[in-house]
Image (cartoon, rainbow, N blue to C red; front, side, top):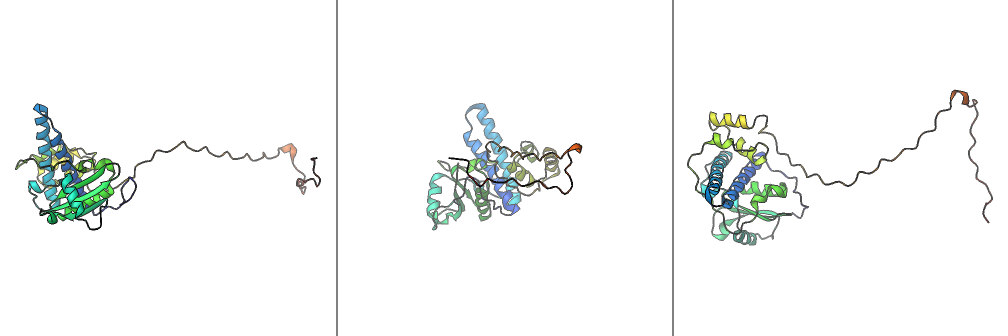
Length: 261
């Protein structure tokens, strides 16, 4: 895609849309986990990130209809794999393409692309469905919402996730204003009554089944043009200035001689 900074309006299916947003939620929390520092605050940040990844992993499993091993969760692509995967593309680099990693002796798929204003983006996914969803995501979302998929210097590993996570507590940390969080919540419905109650409370007034809408950014506009001033119509003659009936106003005449030297 040699398009302008804003993405193509070419959304895939609603299921594809959901998968990509859940994967992006996981990628953002994984980035938080790797950015966390030392000490008590760092431990708390890592614990919260692990909780969030585990909750989103459950949503991803529900959305795909299969349990996904921790190591197979989608994550950003590292620079070495990005470069190697891009070389596997016979047609040359594009803004977003999916390539099987079997050519590198690895399993899964890589999504390699370029987003104006962000640079190289990439993702690694175990299934073709998730990879295709992320490819469509890279082509349709504004750069600001794809920062979590920027190519990393070294491979990112998924932290060890708990076998069980309190989904009701997890839901309380979701942000109803964020599309990724809404996609996660939508795919956690039906787990149990307690989680469903937490979703209803947290997302009260939010339609989790609303179709995807991509709105182009509002461009800064220049000064508003002045409105043209319409010439005033001549006033109607007053009662004492009525023209005689049948009288016509003579058209102006043009002199036949020049007034100049």
